Length: 499
Image (cartoon, rainbow, N blue to C red):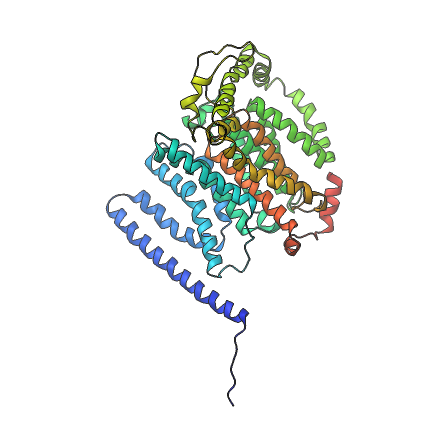
């Protein structure tokens, strides 16, 4: 009598995963061999810079296959230094890091899931991601039908929106746990320290910096990020994450270093001399007083007297801050934006559904500028200084809803799950509030400038992805085990003392 051996579904799945893993390994080997041949050809032709970049891509691809979250980390570390590309070599590196790395990482994640290589189950996407897809489709149709140069505009849209959205998808699909989320702390420390130091040096010793980083030296602080509002958003993001990480660091030296990074970020917000940045900074400090009252009060008692003592050293900056707030020039600067805001409103009235076309605001706004209250149109072609008015003028109500929809969705669910989150872990209600403080900072800044710098878009989607990761894990009971709620008693003691 013969017996029929049966294979369980689990065994069959493991066998398929092994076969798929072997296929993927051979694909990587084939790709690496092809890259090696191309690199050798480029060296013969004298294009050694491209050849070197391709050679580095081989181990990079293998590492990225094993640790996809590095795609976000590498982007956060390198992109701030690739926004100024004066040479062909720099531009190619920008293509690799900003244009290539995020979508390539998303593709790798999908491949690993489709081939059953990744054991961790990907979370299901939902309404926020559907709204994001809707924004992309609506924008691309707008570019195709309404742009005078669709190809060039599509490139700009890819850089500003599609590639940054891939950063959100990386976080959303990977669903990094608490340990993986803490990888961001050294990144935040690096970002805060480098941008703060570059910003400070630009004020006191600008001759040590490249000319590309000195565009607003003596009046504003931008670090390497081109725009003051993007600088203040990035420095808020890195400073707040550094502070959160400081409370859970087991190393006294690293903890103190993270606090220094946070303090430098606060000072950097001040010397950015952006009124929107100052408003956001005040709200962030109020939020921190709510989250960490004892720590913030101790900090205030220590540094407020020190600030009075050093007032003479920073006399020029204090004078310029007063000018930015109270001078007639500052008032005229603020009021001169009203005719442009009015133009955006009139453009929306005429085409409220789909707008005038992505990136077409500057092409049509002059004809709709007019008198606002007692302010006459000054006949100058002012740039737009409001991201949301620009979106609603260019892409109508469809564009505004699909762009802001994901943030509104996650805010609603944040308010639902916030009371149930733990308070004394790194991944906690306090971390979630801190991430929303970053979103608040960018929302305020976006109301005073048009978001065009790709790093600003990236920060928006990275932070929203981190928020979505936490909220999604707590919305589903089956995923609650991903979040570690048991922590050492020493951490609880430290946090209870500091809050």
